[in-house]
Length: 274
Image (cartoon, rainbow, N blue to C red; front, side, top):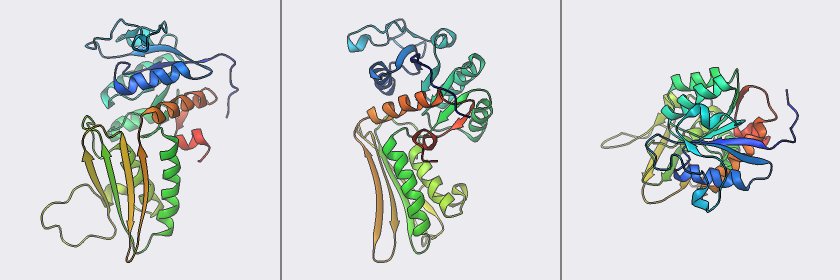
């Protein structure tokens, strides 16, 4: 069921407000038509607590960065969360209780945490994706097509690179790519993924999907899926040069949630690719 779009602006709160991604999200929300920054959350230890969320931009938003979840979400329709699993789960509990929708870009959830998110989506609208980039989600559709066409005679490897500060590996986007490929091939990624090779590994099992991880410098995010056959290689690559694509996708997802009822949605739903 689709709900009508209100004439009122979408009131968006941002978690991790003083971090790199948090600031990018705040700037995107502040510049987006039909959206207003309604709250900003951060850890109690953040030096930004008590300051205006857009002070670093040289202007005032009226939204004060706070560690008090109830206060930070009091006026919000949607919370955008790109923090860490434990933080997102704490935010989820409050959003569920307050009826605040969520856009979740956090990665690294356990199966139990994912189950809790699915359970909460019966009560609030949740859009969860490992990557909010429109380009990445188009690539996921291309990978589904490629995997089906290249199902025989091709070895598949996923190579990803990110900045030195990223704490989980492989990236959520790399795993999503692997899951799309595995599903297209009728496989379970948990059973066919190989996350590291060292020493005498023996000949490559053609039914596996390999992952390679690079961490260094300020790489925003590079992902390549390699289909290596005899006599040819097909590479499908996406490279991010700025986090702004993630922020813009998150704002788009926030608007989408305001037209939907409770449920767990993906960027395919947001982009009409489902």
